[in-house]
Image: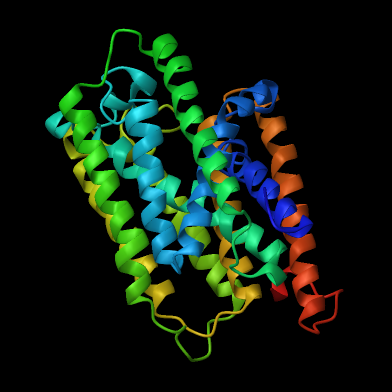
Length: 336
C-alpha cells in the first residue's frame, strides 16, 4: 500500500490523529463514550489522509489544505450529518438566523473548524513527527484509491447512523445536495489546480518568537469558538438575543481574517514556530472544550486526562525539535 515502513507509520498515525484532534481534544466525544471514535475513523482518518495525498501529489501548500478542509466540512456536515440545514439536529437551527434554510452560525463555526482542526492541524502535526519524509506522498496509487473508498464508506456510515437517530424526520433536499456538491467541486478545483500554480516561495524575514505565535493562535482559536458556539447555558451565539447574532458572527469572521492575514505575512517560520502555533491553537481549543462540553464530573475528568496526554505529547515533540535544532533538550516549554 505504501513504499516504505516510515510512510506506512506516517499514514496510520494521521488516520488516528485526525479524529483524536477533531473530536476527543474538544470533548465532543467524551471519554466515557470513546468507542464512538470508531464511527469517525473512516471519514476522518481516511478522509484527511486522502486530502493530504491529493494536495501533496499535486504540489499544493497549506492554502490548498485549508480549501480541501472546507470540502471535508461540506461533505461531513452538509451531506453526511445534514447538520448545515437540519432544523433539529444538535439544536443548530436555534443558534441564530437561517438564511435560505442554512444554519448560519453553525455553518460559520464548523466549516472553518473542520478546515483547521480536522484537516490542517492533524496533517501539520504528522508532518512534524515524520518531518524527514517531508511532503512526499505516504501512499502508492493503489493506497490512494483504497483510502478514497474507505472515506466514501465513512460518509455513508455517518449518514445512516447519526441522522436517522438524531433527526429522523429530516432528509436533505435534492437541490440543496446539488448545491453542496457543486461547492465541493469548485473548492476542490481551486485547491488542487489553481492554488498550486499560485504558490510562492516562503516569505523571508525574522518570524515572531514562537511563544508569540502560540499566543496569537491560542487567543484566536478560543475567541472564534466562543463567539459562535453557544455554551454555559446560552441559547444563541455569544449570549446575545437571536436578533443580534449577526454581530458576533461578523466579529468571528473578522477575527479569523485578521489572524490568517497576520500568520500569512510572517516569514521565516521553522518547525518550532509551526509547532508553537499548532500547540497554542490546540490548548485553547481544549480549554474551550472544558467550558462547552463538560456538563458533569466524569466528562471533565476525562477531558482533563486527554488534555494532559495532549500537552505531554506536544512537549515531547517540542523537545525533539529543539534537540534536532541544536537547542538544549532541557529548555523549557516557554522557549518554544
